[in-house]
Image (cartoon, rainbow, N blue to C red; front, side, top):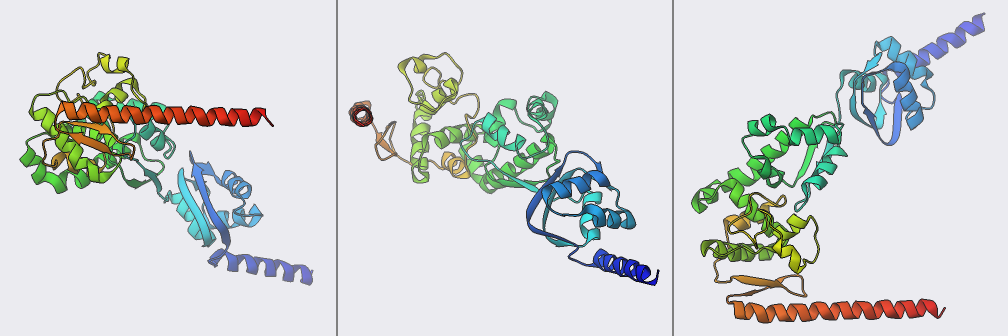
Length: 343
């Protein structure tokens, strides 16, 4: 009887020491726990055991009941390193979440940006797209629905997993205002165009330019066309219409669509993608020159021309290079096929 009492006291003493110790739970790697709803102690214990955070949940349950933590809030919790029972359990019971991050890439489609957010936060696609198309919510933001894409500012955002679609969009639009509009307020005032007009042009520049150092030059070309009443004839707007980034066909240029700048004068009704800050600044600060035409070059940049005659010559060079690339591709494919047949 005395020995049993000693054993009980020893076990109890050991547990009490662990209850107050800072290393009662030791996560040797990072675990990310997502609770889609409030759960009880038994369910949390199962999650900890299944994840490998703890091997034996008996002591965990004992500690939780003794400390009074029996219900745990939904949210995202990052578990790494050592914890006392109270520090970890109280954190999850009180819903003190760890943020998640989502990075929005410039030059994306609306669906691609939506996928990034849907795969990062708790809300599903139905909830997100319902918010995007909620006219009263969009009107409350002070913008038109067609202009929203251009204001989904490229950056990395840190928010809670349980954030609503509304709060996520409000955070992104706030960053657009703080990072793109406010620092360039004087430039917006001087150029005499609305924010959305500048963002629309910037979105075309974003799609067109492969290198930042070309953006102001491309911007100057487009402004030259606009100021002369010419059509923009920007290929990216046609790519937007056909919903593909591919080499365009002659028939594509003849599609009757408001965003087809080969068919319509002026800027398209709204942005075709979400531009980076460098593209917005290029739209605000175009390079001064007399170029009206450009064509792609083998180096991945553009060749600029002042006259249509010059442009036709440069375009012929580009088409010749393209044909050579196709011939070379077919030659390599034929050699590979012959090599496979001879084995």
